[in-house]
Length: 503
Image (cartoon, rainbow, N blue to C red; front, side):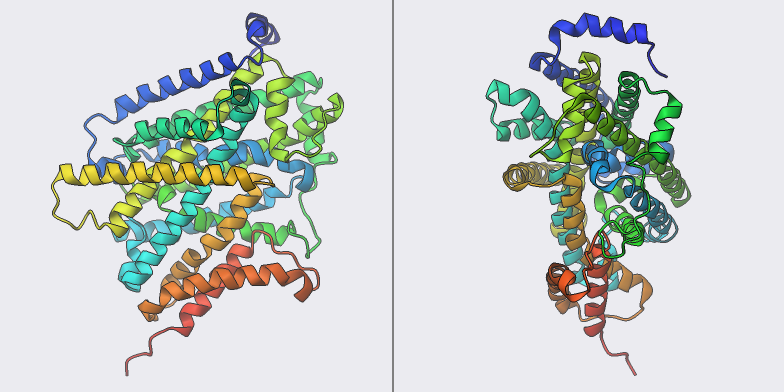
């Protein structure tokens, strides 16, 4: 699985003249993009609207499961999770354990519902359960959540290339983002989900290879054996898994419950992630996909945290200072400037592999949701050509929206992106969590016209409570469980606007 020392030394000697050369890095980006477009060309032949929206329900469950690893991890995990080890140690694993149970809820409750109703957009469930305004509100919160989330994920990757390569060339940040989104637009506009299932598989492979290779090369530089790595991971200064301080954001129960409901909301109630799952032909295979994916994801997140431990130990050994910089800078700084050209090449490839899944699926799902949930494209008797042209226009429009959000985010970012991502998710996915929970748990109908107001007020009230929690609740700080509070407030609000039972 690993290259020998002599093979690595040969490659480094061969590429030494190009070490940290912007030309070499951009050549890697170009080569990877060409490979991606070859896959796109092959998988998008004879694609139609059904291919774009649900992949003609012909996707293989094991291919979807493997590709979802890259889509779920993305550049956020690739960069932020290793950097987070310095401040939260291994406590993020409690979030990952919560993910596992959240995915079980998706597999056993949500997937059977989606298949039974034969949904293309999962938000049409809200239409049948509550009414049109509830349906539009759910779709709106998905579009808001996914736009912000995809922008955050893509930002962290593009920012690395900008900082380490393109700033030296005088290329403006907005142009870098525009080029990335343009490439993604080109390879998703035709094939949609049918294409993304396969491109995610390619991207997952390169991203995981880059991480495993980084672990190996840092251990090699530190003269660590496999036993040394395990000792540092399980018994070192960064190995704390359980935080018992209940007031802190990283308290273990907050992390576990937060992770569980983050998985339910950000995967099970997310059109992008479910669009791939329901492209599988039947519910049993889709459940196989979800269970296998959830097990593998636990181990992969563990590897990312182990990488974080090695990165911090390497930084200490080499006297690398990160004063005034975010923890997201740790991995690229070491991979590009301290491990040689072999590491730099594969870090860039892994980084690009992490970037594409986070944006290609988002663009496809945003296009699908807007076309189906707001334009009602599936219910109109438009000819195939007109439907396709409308879909193209929506697809391009969302590309410009992503561009604007990423540029704005770079102007205001002052924290690790993963922290920002989950904070935003707590506010934007909360109403979706409350709507689906009320719909599945209760049989009560609600006054549909008031649902948008409830879903607006609950995040605002959640923000107010979070802002005053330390003063009001004896030092209590909300972590990822903020999403649960938001969902509960939405649920309670829906109960207040319930319709009286008929006599």
